[in-house]
Length: 137
Image 1 (cartoon, rainbow, N blue to C red):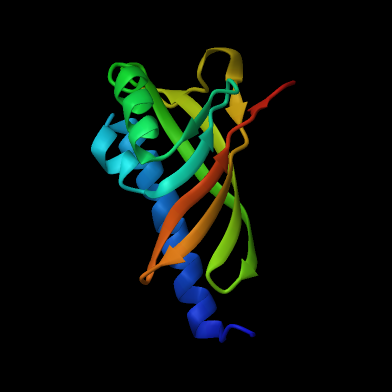
Image 2: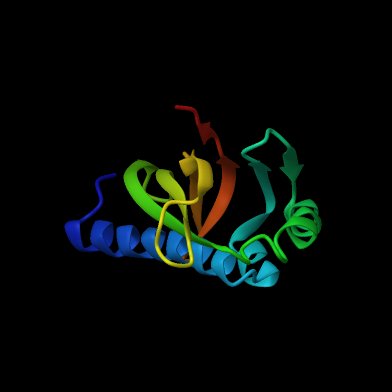
């Protein structure tokens, strides 16, 4: 099945909005907003290799690490590639960077390279299987 350009464009916009919401939830340390982006049975592997299975486990981890994590940082998440595996499943490659509050690259200039597999559920794109990887210089 081939997507029409209008449907394709709307799905790309919706996927970019999910990634923008990830960025916003991280920046504002909004655990519930972040967790709501995941399917109930989602799998997430953090940038440090911790595997989290299911929204409840993702919520517990996020509640433990997110509050206070962005005190001096501003995250940036940029969608760099979207591959539609099917019309309702997309692999989304993201460039993740952190900046100081005055706009300078964060100390060490570390970057992440998340891959989000997203699925469209009842018309809404959700994070389904995610892997974050630290970019090594």
